[in-house]
Amino acid sequence: MGDIKGFVCLNCEYEETHFIGFGFRVREERILYVCNNCEALTSTNAKTPRCRTCRSRRLTEVKDDFAFTKCPECNHTGLEELAGHWD
Image 1 (cartoon, rainbow, N blue to C red):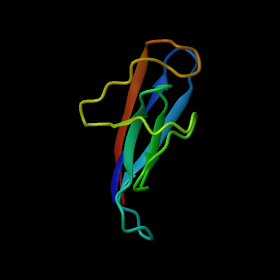
Image 2: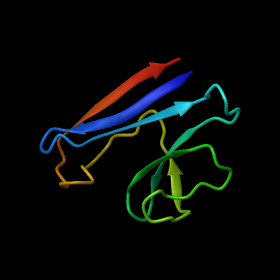
Image 3: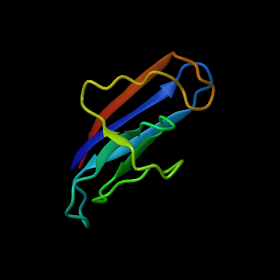
């Protein structure tokens, strides 16, 4: 019961998706963050979230108006946003 957020790179076809919201087993909401240090996306329900790539705690919550700027694999700027809902 939540949203799916992610992107597909139009250059190298790298795909990244995150399931956010409330799950069936976990009562805390899963929130999507972007790391201020390495710009990686991380989704977690931890009270003190960390980046999954560099382990930094300098994260910013991703809002609905978030636009993915570049691919983490090839640094191409042409990304297609993925969005949806899950039950």
